[in-house]
Length: 346
Image (cartoon, rainbow, N blue to C red; front, side, top):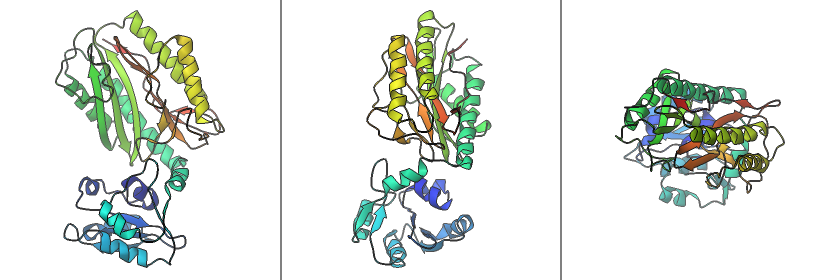
């Protein structure tokens, strides 16, 4: 496994700065029997040993050396047989393609499905980290929006949201996507601009942040001034559609049924939902993970899964979304994103 999330999942090793450099790679080789073999730059061997003391560590010296020879050494420690790679859906290699090609001379198989089968179900410690990240962002929205958004630029508001998330317990902030103003409400992944939020604008932001490597991802919006009846109606309709999906997040429920419940509730309210191919997604060590809340996904919810429910509407009045992060339990679903779902105003 060569991606940061899978390496973290299987070894507990988290080295965020290392993954920002394409000059350095890491990998973990997991045998069917026995301890893992971690391939790592020589200057982090102590950190790896401290986090995963049972592992055998094979070191190399980047950027003078690439990971090829060290990975060959690690694979040589294993008996003959096929080698599984994270090659399938929603997977990414963390090594150069030419290295993978050089090392995939054994029978190469895709183990992405097996990995997702493990990672989709979170243990209590993982859920606690997801909850802490969601709480940090919930408190950030409250801290920033309660001060009002009028007269502040999108960049100022985005920086304030990121800083508030960190002050309230987030370890990292991955993004603050935001937009405001007539003609800009389709910018649902827009970077913050120097544009000043004016009276009557709706300011919308989506924040991604982590605690212990586990992500949260949800959005909230505020209006510069009073909330008009039209905006309130749109938001109320989206809140109701979201709640219908949340209520279905129980063990044994196909994710397709969750998506259908959302669509029915939106249709009953007379609002057209955005078509992003799905109405929510799993979340964990990656900001988006399987399953997808969509008619085409055959997954069935299980206790321990954590998903987002995020129907949205874009209209001339704004972006309307009340995205929720939801933990599936043996009982009622638990909403981790505690920030109010109405539109802030002021």
